[in-house]
Amino acid sequence: MRLVNYLVVWSVVTIYSATALIPRFRPRGGALTSVKLRDSSSLVGDPSSKMNVNALLKQCQQRNDYTQALELAEEMENDPKLNAFSATTAIRLYGEAKQLGKAIGVLAKLKSCGLGANEHHYGALIHAARRAGQWEMALVLFDRMVDEGIQPNVIIYNTLVSVLGD
Image 1 (tube, rainbow, N blue to C red):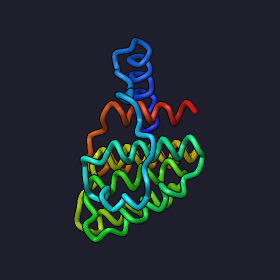
Image 2 (image 1 turned 135 degrees about the horizontal axis):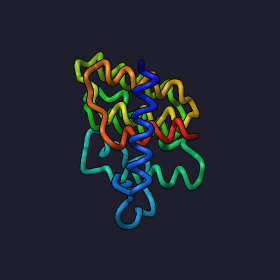
Image 3 (image 1 turned 90 degrees about the vertical axis):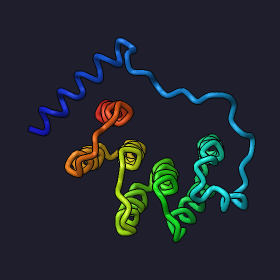
Image 4 (image 1 turned 30 degrees about the horizontal axis):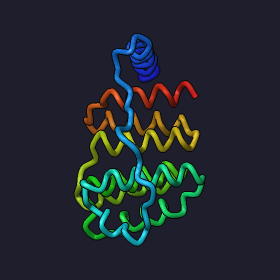
């Protein structure tokens, strides 16, 4: 039955994507030129620092070196004031570095702190599974998200379709 659901979702999203009814995410403006890890303490739990994290990820992608991103993710994960934003950011950082196991560990830690997961956490995890080339895990994470009663959004469906298409 779930396979039928996946096929229906894939068909619908593919049709909408082909007709350009689903907008694609496009970053606005230019990226920052440098982000230093010593400034990362200001990133923990601060939603206004989203651009700094995105700039760090862009730099890591350009250099193909995720050392700084992994250090920041570990710092965020181990912060006693772990919140929804810092958990999502840590999952994204681990995902970009293809560290799916650690990304899933952040979600487990978030739940153990008594905080619930949301579509942003699962979206980042599904994207991490895509980066790691583990489409089966992406489907498992999608199932878990639906089982927990979290409504998938368009971005998650697009990511899932991309996972199945890779």
